[in-house]
Length: 253
Ligand code: SAM
Image: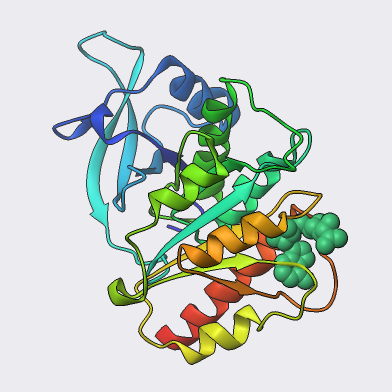
C-alpha cells in the first residue's frame, strides 16, 4: 500500500463506487503519475477517508477515465485535536511554503491574516493556489484530511472569529511573540493535558505591534515564546506546529 500513489479529490466527485475525475486529475494520473488503465492508486476525500481505487475507462463516455473504488482503507495519521494556524501573510510567495509545511505537520485549519505590518495584500487567485498546495502536501504526507484554508481577513476579524473558543471549551489560543521573555510554548503544552483544540498565531516579518499583542491577550490568547532566537516569519509557524505535533504524538504513544 505504501508504494501506491495518492490523489486527493472532493467528496462530491464520488458517485456510488466511482469517482468522476476532472480533466486535470486524469492528466495528472496518466501523464504525471504515469498510471495505466487497470492500475491501482489511493483516493482520499480530504475529509478523513481513503480508498483503494482502480483506473478504468469511463464506459458512459462522460470523461475518458474514471476511478472505481474497490475497498476502503482504514488509517489514522491525523493529530488527535483540531489545530488552527493564524498566520500574518509574509512577503512574496512565502506563504506557499507555510501552507505546504504546516500541512505536513498536521494543521487542520489555516487562516491568513493582514496585520498592521503585513506587506502583502493577496490577489483573489491566491486562495485557490494555496488550496492546491495543501491538497498536494496532504497527498504527499499521507494525511487523511486536507486542511481548510479560509479567505484572508484583517487581524481584528481573526481574533473575533475565535472569541468564543477558550479554556472552558478546552481550546488554547497562543500568540507567538519574539523577545519579551514570554513563557515557552513547549512548557505550556506540556502543562495542559486536556487540550481539545489549539489555535496558534504568528506574525509578519516586522512582528506584531504592541496593540495587536494586547488585543490578542484581551481576547484570551496567551503570549508565548519559541525560544531566544528570532525566527523568520516563515520559520515561526513551523516551529510552533512542530512542538504541538511532537507533544501530541508523544501523548498518544
Ligand atoms: N521584527 C520582530 C522583532 O524584531 O521582534 C521579529 C518578527 S519575526 C521575524 C516574525 C514572527 O515570528 C513574530 O511576529 C512571531 O510571531 C514569530 N517569532 C519569531 N521568533 C519568535 C520567538 N523566538 N518566539 C516567539 N515567536 C517568534
